[in-house]
Amino acid sequence: MASINGVTIAILLFGIGLLGLILRRDLVVKLLALGLVNGSAILCLVSLNARRNSVPPIAHSLNHAPYVDPLPQALVLSAIVINFAILALALVFVMILVERYHTTDSQRIEHEISREEEER
Image (tube, rainbow, N blue to C red; front, side, top):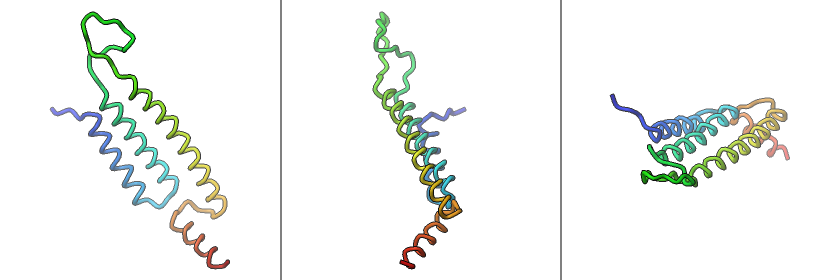
């Protein structure tokens, strides 16, 4: 039985998230799809750096096992924090748009904005 590795799952999740961003009109669903794309990028970074039988770089090993590179772990941690901030800010913008136009449909909001510009 073939096992599916993390990079394959990350590519699959990226594709699903990208389809959600392109095909869906609801802004909240688009934000969820963006979160899925971000999560897939993080999963890909973690999966590419995964090594079996490796030790932390501070440990003094006598069996000459390979060391784990801490840089991707720091990048993933930073990416998680930045993605959370981006999604929180985008959700605030969606809330402002919903309060003004009373819908989460992106095409309807675009139509309302173009109608407002024509009235000026």
